[in-house]
Amino acid sequence: MKLPESRIALAFMAHPDDAEFCCAGTLARLADAGWEIHIATAAPGDCGTTTENSWAISARRTAEAAQAAALIGGHYHCLDERDGFVVYDRTAIRKTLDLFRQIAPSLVFAHPAQDYMLDHEQASLLARMGSFLYGAPNASVLPVRAGSGIPYLYYCDPPEGIDPLGRPVQPTTWVEITGQLPRKTEMLAAHASQRQWLLAHHGMDEYLESMQRHAAKRGGEIGAAAAEAFVQHRGHAYPHDDLLAALFGRQ
Figure (cartoon, rainbow, N blue to C red):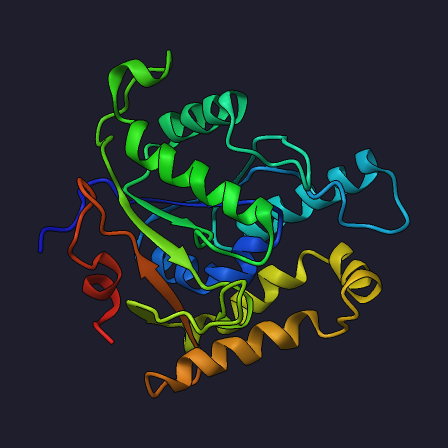
């Protein structure tokens, strides 16, 4: 297969720390291979607290997200929607298209179409729309960058690798991240505000450990210590060849 001339990857997620849970190991491998890395969230994480007001926690969480992205030389962006109110509407679509237009990604990571939280599902729709439409000249008033076009699109694993009805998700692609797991852990640990929130709201006091267990589970499926798993979007007009497999080895 012919690899994209433009090497720009975008992880478009709902909230700060979603990319770190879902695909940070793969983003680190891409960064090591010379790709330009962007992490974007629809919302700033304004509900991720039991003790702070929305403005204070948003400032903390977006700063943490920028810090995490910088650990692999990446850039962070936020559409500034609100937690729990991410919707596929005209305003969010416009923001998404303008962001995609500015970045011009050739590779996009998104939440799965079916996930435990509706913010994730709506962000997945926005990512799918943005990836399909951003290269059309009339989609945005911003100029079309060289290399713009329908990118490779991969859906990340949902938590525990199960859909909202508890059914296992069958990946199309695995990326070994054994060597990148320390950086993935460091990126997730940059979201320090979330440990107490998850303990209070989810009853979880294993922010990093749960991520590492899932990486080990997916790694075991391919005979590796750690991996991330994805489902490739192969609908009409999207690339059908597996870019991640071509870059990092077919599993």
